[in-house]
Structure formats: C-alpha cells, structure tokens
Image (cartoon, rainbow, N blue to C red; front, side):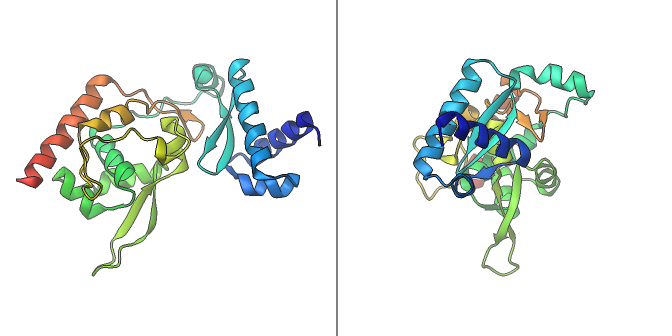
Length: 221
C-alpha cells in the first residue's frame, strides 16, 4: 500500500469508529507493523494541525482517535445548539488531580487527602467519563479503586500519563498532591464527549492548589 492509501484507510477506520482505536487493531486491519502505523498517524496529525483542518488526530496512550479541532468549538456548539457544559468546580479539580497523580486511588484515600467526603464529586467525574472504576483493593470491605480515562487524557491534551508534569521534591511513596498540580489542571480546556469543557481560570486553579496544600498539612499534623 502507498502512504496516501494507508492514510485514507486509517482516516476511514477512525471516522467510522467514533472512539479510540487501538494501534494493534489498525496494524491487523492494514497488515502493517506498528512502527509504520505510528509514523503514518504522526504525519497525519501534523498535517491536520498544519493545514488548520477542522479535525485532529490525537494519540491516547496506545490508541488513536479523530476529534474536532478545539479552536472551532464555538462554531460546532452553535451548529448543534448545544449548551456550554458546567465548569468543573474546585472540589472536582482537587479530586481529579489526586486520582490523576496517584493512579489508582480509593474514595477513602481521596477523602483523607481532602479532609471532606468526596462521594458526590467522584460520582460527577464518573458521569463525565474523566475517571473510571478499575477494580477493588484487596483489604477488608474491598473499596473501589479509581483511575483516569482516555477522556481525561484528551481533555488535558496528553498522549499518556507519562506526560503529566512532574511533582518535584515528592518521594515516590508519597501520594499526596502538592501545589505543583497547578501545571496540570491549567491545561484542562479541550473537548470531552464532543463538547468543550469550560476553561479553568488561574484563580480557580490557585484556589484548588491552596486547598490541597492546606489539607495535606492538616493530615500530616
């Protein structure tokens, strides 16, 4: 297959899927090795961006997905007359940051860090598909564990969790979140389930960071 034909085939597969497609599935469908598929997808993504096309090809860990370009979100919302989704609250940002950096976390752990009950906020993040259940902890009561989703990666503009900003001066065994979470939540502004998440203001980010820092100091006292 020529490169142009491969690009067209990948574009058709991703468009028809409407959701992330694993690179191994693409390799199987096209009878190509992973290196070739990754190279072609990277070229396609660069072309979409360079030509300022209305769609983008994004990589989500080991999957690829077509989505609308965020800069054209106002026109897309107007065309479909969709409501601007509610802004993520400060508690939601706190819980999301804790789960994102800890990978995985139970509700009890999140409650311990924040110092308040987080059941409602976790439910909200589950509804938005920013987090998901990923098994149960092998302790009495078997509490549910949570992790972030591919929607979270797409919303943050990340290809994988490895791209999360590092937390300096934080030992690996320490799951507490410091004020460095600001660098991550600052980027929460892209598309979730076909709609834009409202942009998080610097004031909200700083407030969430201060609240987390305060709760860590209290829990460590």
